[in-house]
Length: 159
Image (cartoon, rainbow, N blue to C red; front, side, top):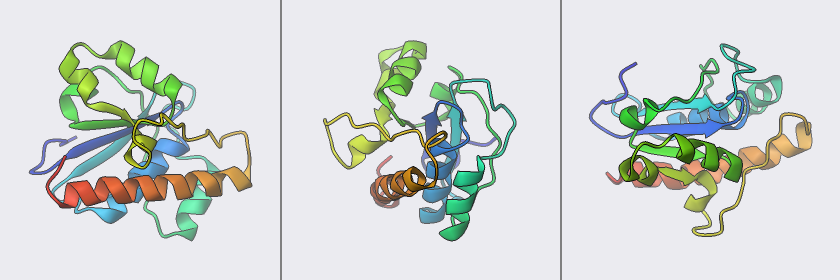
C-alpha cells in the first residue's frame, strides 16, 4: 500500500473498523484528490478482520454516494510511520492508539476527529454498531462535517 504519495496520508481509527472509520475514510476520499493523497482506516479489535463495512454504514454511504472499498484491518504501530495524521473516533480509541505510540512524534499525529470541529472539547463520535438506523445518520453528519474540515486543510496544503 502506497501511503506516501505526493500529499497527505490520513488514517481513521475506531474499534472494529466496520462503521465509523470506514465511513470517515469514504467521506474524505470523496472530498480530496486520492491520486495525490492517501486515506485508509483501521480498527483496534480483531473481531471483524477482513469484513466489509457493516450494513448500516454501507446503506447510508450508498444513500450519499460515498465510496466504500474497504476490508477491516488492525491498527499497528507501523501505521505511525505510514500516516501523517491519525484520527480516532472516541476517547477509548485515543487511549489505545496513544498507548502504542513509540515517541512524541507518533503522539503528535493522533487526534480525536471531532476536535477538528470542536477544538479542545474532546467529543466522541458514538459507535452506531448496536444502536440502529437513527444513530447512523447522526454519525454520518458528524463525520461529514469533520471530514469537510480535514479536506479543507488538505486541499490548502496543510497536512
